[in-house]
View 1 (cartoon, rainbow, N blue to C red):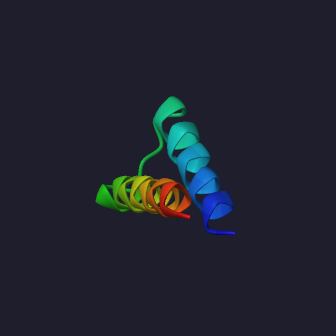
View 2: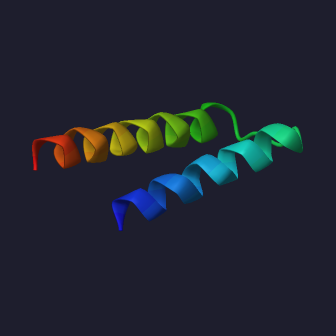
Length: 48
């Protein structure tokens, strides 16, 4: 679930970057959140 949300956020960020449409720091904040979620998932999967 969280991984899917993270992927969607990254795709939206890339689309915003390609189309030169950015909403200030908000889209970059979403990117940072997506990266953090993916890193947490990777760390948790390695533990288990």
